Image (cartoon, rainbow, N blue to C red; front, side):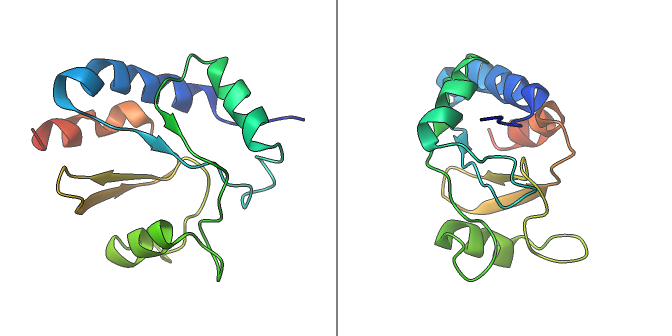
Length: 126
């Protein structure tokens, strides 16, 4: 099994979680998906074990579909509320959504935007 979870993204998300998780209540929710070039072919246990190799302690959920007719309702709603560039579908793993404490989606970030680049937007929420 070969997980392709981006190590830089995982590390930066963990750094944000360590910096703001306890002090500001930041929650990071990771939802693996195998809909992008079959990058997550393993079981949920395999994916979790791989993430633990990067010392990930934020919430890791079961693998889901984020696009198409069987997309998880959360992702369907996020795409509807925060439109994407060119089309609304999730384009690749590591697409990120910032949601405020009230549960309102605030901003969408492209998969190629490093997690540390969203820190200034996080700070605006506090």
